Amino acid sequence: MPGIARVKRAAPGCRNTQTTRVVVPLIEHRVFHRLSVRLPVRYAIAAGQEQVGGEGGTINLSAGGMLLSVQAMPTPMVAELLEGRGEIRVAFALALGEDEIATHCRLVWMQGPKRAGDGFELGLRFLDLPSATHDRIHAFISQMSH
Image (cartoon, rainbow, N blue to C red; front, side, top):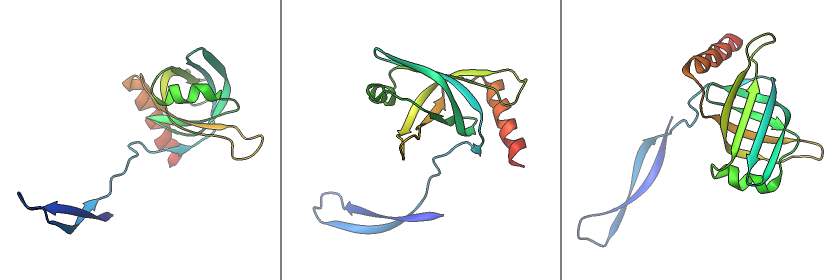
């Protein structure tokens, strides 16, 4: 669905501007289809002098990343991770008995607890996923979506 933008332009050498309405396509930012699925995930996060690890779970999964729920996230780590510094590793299996997928991730966004006792939500992008593993996740999502 297109959107409408207002653009101010001036003729070359002229100081007067004219506002024009232009129809522009809206861009979908999500490249991969997401599947709401709960999978156990082991994670390890390191940034600066801080390290934290444990077990969490997916809220959703795509071939490009996951939304991970964790109980603890030291505040000093967040700024470094959002700037691309630090390291996040996750490991998870798509089903019982399947080989585990282990990969590095980048923190794209984070949301703190909404209520007391809630965990943190980490929007993660996979960084070093081999194409065969990417295809495996994509096939899993396609199969579970139908």
